Image (tube, rainbow, N blue to C red; front, top):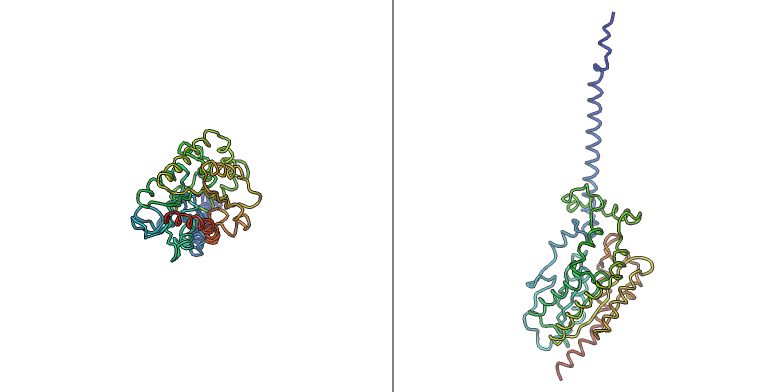
Length: 336
């Protein structure tokens, strides 16, 4: 008679457990191999290197590679005193003017505009005193630093829709930048091109489904806040006062948001146009210029709305043409 104990399930379990463990290990290995392969592919193709501005690996690499002069700006060094007869321009702005997403220091529009304007018959030096994340109050501080060593004749303020922010708005901005996948460690999100891409895709999905505040909603809220606009006017007034003290001409340039479809930030344009008129400052609007192009052609990527190299060339060409008469006028006034 057979021993019933020989048919007990326990006698069969070890081989099944081993097979299950082997299959699980094989699956984990395949998943890990796929993730590593995708990470390598993103790095080798260069797709991730210039694709993101939200603290990811592309942004970190750009910070490390961008040049910095003695004043801490993304520009070359300039002598304390300008060449004889030269007109000096200080350009203030945020990440658009700083050149987020573009690794070539000579391919961003402040450098290109200087190259266009600087001619043997009329020397021009243009200092790019921009900073990533700057709003108008921060640009006031940047100007205070630049004016002590550069002595400008013209001050160009490049305004972007979120520049009405003040330091007190940092908390309001938090919902926009909070992680879409909080369970992903920051070390992985900030260093892995693949996981950063997944994070951005999840963020877009949350915005489209109403689970996350989108940028347009945040901007519209800012421009409905009278105190915010009054504080922004104060910052502009202080920049204008310093420019007047330096004997410099203030110029204001509107940098639009780059997105497909009808422009949704006309209220911001109306605000800064009115401020330029109030301050008697020449006003140049880039929105009609850039709206002639498909945003996909002139921005870094679908995830990063900053200008790519083509966008910088377009802006530089327009800006240098607008500034050239002011340069000639400034030089003529100096020679009277």
